[in-house]
Image (cartoon, rainbow, N blue to C red; front, side, top):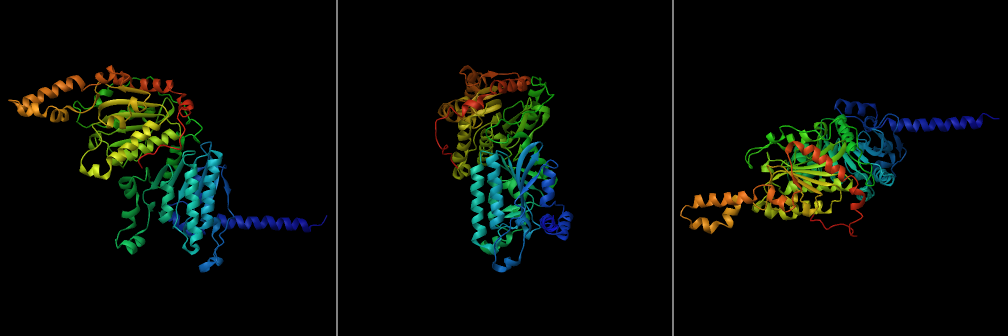
Length: 526
């Protein structure tokens, strides 16, 4: 047998090795070293850190652009500036797209977009979570409409996968222009503190088109989005911390909307009594206290993974576990704006509720709120429209819903924080709870106004009417007498009762959705 066929085979194998080595080098050692000095990992190092060793399979390594204008016929971009593939994270399959800034600044091209979109389609079809690692100089302008059109493919793929698989976006470098839309279209955004920047346009574009002079740090950093805009859910210290937080998120989520979230073993007794819990609450209804302390004392092992912790701080959202079972928590924070629900808090809460409902994660509320925020500023900015988002979210939800009223639960906010008539399976209250339509001061100033004004001693009459109202309504027992509250419980039993309720509702998710009348979706007040 001739040696000729063997040598040709070896040549082909060597060619493959050369091509692979070229793509694996990315932008080359000098560019990679520069990134390392700046404290950043490369696109491939990020993948190695996230995925279980030896489980990642790359797809699309040899994809190349077809552009010829402006010298692109002479430019070769390793893997088109994006590494895509699938593997296991903590033993479960996950799909990723990791942008490579070392290769032509990770610029978004036609085939960069095709790879990105295809990765999300694969995740949707397989029922696996999707994680994007975003680090790109933006649109590859040399390709014109070919590159721009690729955004549409990506947006469409994300939309079609939304609600089917969890999607997490990590902002690890610049993400500007059209590139910045797709992270916020995913379920959760993690932004690296010193290297992640996200914005609809960079400072140069802003100055050219509006005349405003502003730094990238002020315009697009985590402060802009984790605190002000509410588009960044979690802030990470560096690349590794960001990917660790991705793993934390994934540990709470099912792989897709047809599964239950993963339950873990815990040594924390589900019936554990919590002595002194009531001592955390203030003596007077309007004195602040820290709701985080109650949450951490009640959940498994004191572990609470918060989302949007720096934005709308009057509302608390995040994930915890009860007896090993993932649960979403929505709570008021009396230390911030007395726990009142304003526009930002409404958006924050509604979005979180809908995510949990989409992925079969039970929801528990801890309630202490005086009202939806009132006044001209909130009214004119649309508090009714935004506040209604929470009402829609609760009324649409089919997962187990449990409300624990700690303190005030007044007016429309009573429904915004989950009431039986809007969909709660169980509502419990502490003896410190005040479950009623309005506070006594407001009532006295409205329905008793004339009587007080005409009294010989208006102040004495006001106090008398307020006491009369409080004696009847400023407690949890009137609501319990009507069945609006299922039980008034001892605070130390809070954990046991929540776990008991979750056990009772274990199989609710299997039947609740099927019982809904057919429709495309509710017309939520966006």
